Image (cartoon, rainbow, N blue to C red):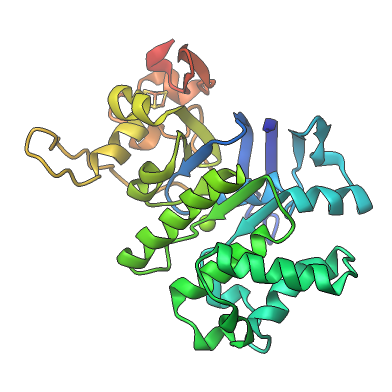
Length: 314
Ligand code: SF4
Ligand code: MG
């Protein structure tokens, strides 16, 4: 469905000294139609910037993003607007992205207004369909966001994202602000909608447990780089990158046999405006050699569908 090639997103620092922040640093990967591609990494690793760039809420500094055959990295004006119908985003905090002075109906009308839909009857019918699709009722349409719970508001956020029949949805920490029990309900809803509507998700979360529950494939990010990509099962059983191993060892396990020794990462995440030389992870990696400090490891396929960026697997 989407193919990213050498995507870079660099931000200039506030002053000359702070340099350039390489939020997304030369990332290439593909998202298959109908899959959930999960992305994990600590905060500040560039996951959200990557997600926003894939649907051009953020312009890439360099690189190509192919969707339906055209490079959306270069689209402008009307073409960009049309592309936006196909790809939508759901944010973390539903309260922050629903206008408090508008009713749910008005909020759901917005995408149709923006895209110039003038057929009122059609819009009303779609809005009623959408609200039911996300497990709410038509009487919710006359409510204001503050009259709804966090979970209900996130359902409205999902309904709004679905308004124009997109094929790709970026979920950026879509359940992170919700209580654990509500998280499960919203995750189930996302799963149902995916099957019913044939959606594809790019699912961003700092919570590996959540990513694991929903993803077909997972990409692990560290300081603007994708360091490992594999299917859910492969990543779990054959995790290769030292950073992935540390992340996965932190997931609590239920049975004693499954319980593994937790790998504690040393030190802080370095600043993305001044990342370490060579492998960005070398300052925290227990397998680091001189080569790791000198030479950046490239993402390579070590077995079919399993990509790792680490010199240990050369
Ligand atoms: Fe560790 Fe070296 Fe692999 Fe980087 S390249 S993860 S420093 S072993
Ligand atoms: Mg984020």
